[in-house]
Amino acid sequence: MTTFWTDIEILRFIDAAEKREHGTVGSGLDMLKTLAAERGVGLADDDYRRFLSELFVLHNAGLLTWVPMQSPARVRQITPAEPLDYLNNTRDFTLTYAGRNQVQGRVVLTPLPDRAEDDGRMIASLTLEGIAKCIGGRYDSHQAVLFLADSRLAFGHEPPADGEVWEKLLVIFAELSRGTSGERRELRHFLGAWLDDQLHTGPTNDECDRIERDLARQGWFVRDGRLVVGEPVRRGRGTQAPPPAVDRLHPIVWKAAATRWAAKHLHDAVIAASKAVNATLQAKIGRSDVSEVRLIQQTFSSKPPTATEPRLRFLDIADRQTRDSVTAGALQFGVGCFMATRNPIGHRPDDEHEMTEQEALEQLAAWSLFARWIDRAEVVES
Image 1 (spheres, rainbow, N blue to C red):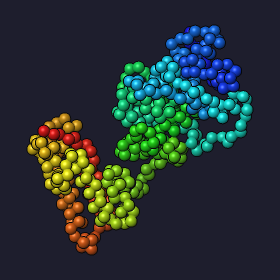
Image 2 (image 1 turned 90 degrees about the vertical axis):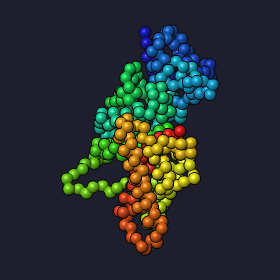
Image 3 (image 1 turned 90 degrees about the horizontal axis):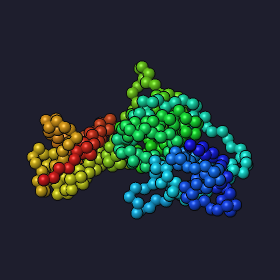
Image 4 (image 1 turned 120 degrees about the vertical axis):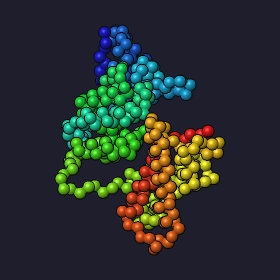
């Protein structure tokens, strides 16, 4: 029979250990066995999961901390997905200041949570599904659990054993979204940190744009690494299109052009972007003996690769004819970028050709697109 473990019981046990009223707390498993012995009950398989879930509730409430004993010698590091192993490899259970106040019955008055962060509205299920698919596409089931644990997302609901990784993640997100205020806060902080690129991995620029637009329509916005509520954004009739997000260009392009763009040195911004893309392409195929037009012509050539000339190919395109067409198009596009934008700017004085901000932005966008194609293509060697 499964035993229900209470939070105050655990806090009092650790408080007594800190006061040396009984033996010190060893591992989490030792603590569970001692509590079970004091109750005179045996341990069922589900007790480990329930007990660990209660520990995470206390941890996320800011009442309790512990140290997981990760070991380089272990092939698989400990994970909450394996409760018995996780409990057996956790040490140094310590009450926080708030935890000591709780167990000793001290009342500390604090302001109520900011209603701007949670007014009870739900995050749309389709939005959560899209997020789950983005994360699930990067990890297998074991890695996904490690990712959530490293991100300190606590969840007390077991995902289904079968199904795709994204389906399991969606179950966790949906349960948290429908849960208590604390569970909803857990989810908002996790999603905000993920969108803000604060975790081990985050969304791509395109994924981030799409998800943030979707959330904005529901009145959710990222602020300081968490989701907060606001007025839903609607696209009304007759309204102007939003200005282009110049900082959403390919990171290589924008990093090279940003300072020059801010200083209104438009020609320099485009030149810097072209140099950055050229260097990226050289680094990807491991060549520094050629550059610019010749580099592109040889890299995207339809000829087979040689010992000195590796090629780039769009191997993710299954159809041979389409793949060859895209490769040829990338070659012509890249050559055009250098011959029609880079060379005229680099070989003629600025006063011989005017450039508006809009034109400079469009040229940067062309370099950004070409940089994304370089990222997408794979190196093929002889």
